[in-house]
Amino acid sequence: MAVHNYHRGMLERAGESMDAFEPDERYLGGVTVAIPEYLVEQVKDELKAFQSRMLDLCDSAENEAERVYQLGLQFFPLSEGSDEP
Image (cartoon, rainbow, N blue to C red):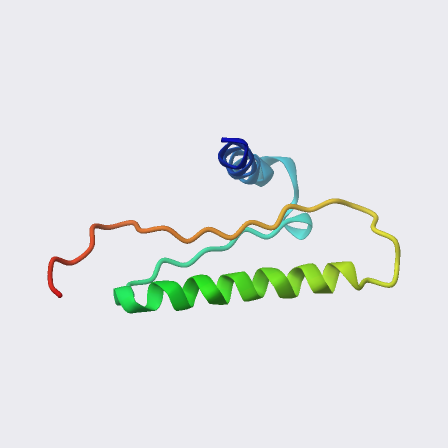
């Protein structure tokens, strides 16, 4: 429950960031893609690898942190799956 509440809260804050911060202080991007079901796990693995690289990059910074940012990655279906095998 706590994890769900965390993600809901961060998604709400992402929406609020459009009004709260200038574009040079934030990045909001997204893509909508049509993919075969067999690629779902590979895409999720790529997102996990990207998240890990971002953690490594930020953790290895030589200077002390000056600000806290939220980096969110979402991947979810927007349509029903095909009934075809």
